[in-house]
Amino acid sequence: MKNRFLFAWLLVVLVACQSEPEGRPDEYYLKAGDSLSAAAFQTIRGALQTAIADNGVEIAIRFCQLNALSLTHQLNTDSIKIERLAERYRNAQNQLTDESKAVWDTYKNKLIAGDLLQPVLVRAANRIDYYKPILLQPFCLTCHGKPNSNIPASLVATIDSLYPNDLAKGFSVGELRGLWQIRFELP
Image (cartoon, rainbow, N blue to C red; front, top):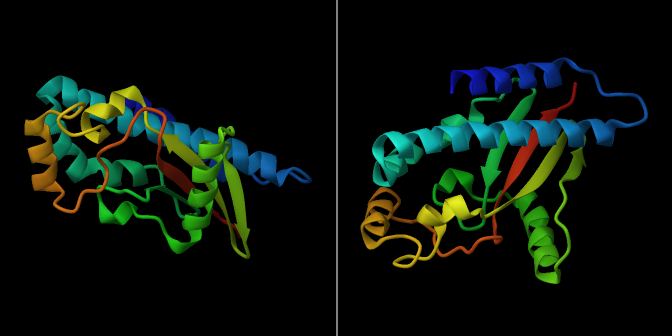
């Protein structure tokens, strides 16, 4: 776990220290966003897998409640902010922003049409936002699948007690679960 975090931290430092290449800034931000979202995902997934292996799924749900946001933000710097956002969120701090809603809707429509979902960049005056879809993986069904089918009743009760306003159950593999937003602040 420490090695994984060290690698992710070094990746953030390298991205933050590189300057945008002349003539190909989109390529730079897409690669940086891909690397950072992968590192953030591995950090969260690794911590969750460790929590499950050490203490079981019910305790891992409590672990997520206490640590998922801080794990997501662990790679943030002064000029790079990483978020996980969703329409159907478990934690209200992960709900879509007005800015991310249009990207979300585009991803939903592309998924319905059977199109490939690719990361996108959205530019503003002083920043570039990288967005990447998060599709539900089989590993995630235990906590985000269908209650009393993928999610055992006892675990549904735990989730509901920790997240009384939970919207993040009832998913199937391959559904749009969320999206990564990585904000690159420009000098």
